Image (cartoon, rainbow, N blue to C red; front, side):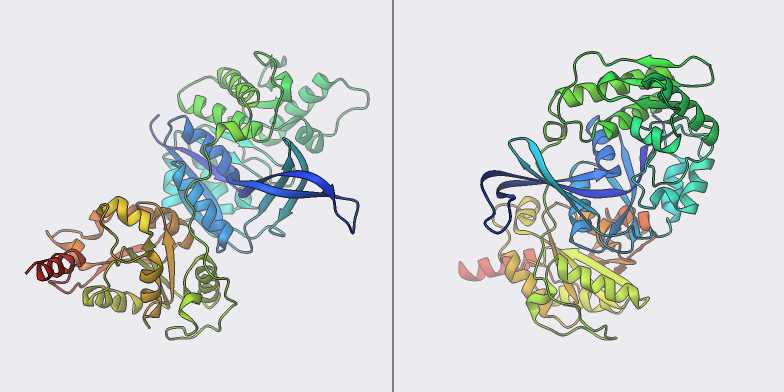
Length: 486
């Protein structure tokens, strides 16, 4: 493959809540579910991207993330799965689908997130990655990303094969897509069936109608456990049966089908070959236990903090209790305030194990570059992984409170991963700042920063600010230990 596989579309947060039912509610004849476990995973386009990344491909996800806890959780899960997130801003809340389950059966699905928010404009970096893709999968869940005009222009212009997984509430595919992959019910909504027509006749008529309407190269209608029907330029459709019985949880099977077809096209397969691969992959996925068996346990979480209420936007540093400035809720409130006022979001990060004058100088300089400063703080586990078993000296709780108490810091976000990539993909700072100790050796300091490439995904800038010489946490520890041994 000459470039990454790009998945573009709406991402949802899926949560399976498992429990047991032993009684009815006393005030209403409904079962009471006693929760025993809960699992989070990306849904929609995010699930398709995770499936593609699990096959070893380089995968880029272009999606919209909201400034809320759900958006932060999605960013962490996707990054942990090896997906490179190129986020667009999303007004409103993260859409969530919560399935309440007992003994393997879904009792109720609870959807929240409200009406679809408007996705923001893509950065130049997003448009470049679409142009360089080996294949593009549009995973449309009808919430607006596939309707974004600049993205549609980029999809129409790319030379990579485009697979379009449509949604009845979504827009038409851009003209010239290589393959569209609706399921039976979607085809019936998009192309009304003739009375009395057989199942195959309905699927074939619908596929040919969509192929002409969208000027698509081919349309493959997925038929559940019976495989898929492929219509292309010829008058006779190709029926691809499943290789065996495929009974089980079908949640995510359509995403698995579309992701497998996209990967096959990226590797040079014919459309008919790609559909055969996709049918085999989707069948094996369902037979193997579905999404619960296919995905690893939930990845590390960007931690939620206190749920403080909204604060009035001020031109200077924000007040309030120190604890109210730590965690996802605090950062989400701050982001909404600053962005609603048209302000500039600045972020920096680090371990900040022993807060010293060098840290303070960097933080004060960073705060002057915008309208708020968010500190991405390595958790205790992250510091230990980076620095060794003797670190950190101070717990993440103490380190976050000390940072939040500084007048130049507006909020603190603790993250568990070795790098702040997931946190950055959610925050989408306009400016990412590091201390000038990274600038030693001359040349372009920002080019040496591992986060610089991540920040460019949404059009942000990376800068280095002056650093006070002779200040180092490691030196402080060494000197303290030396004093104790005298």
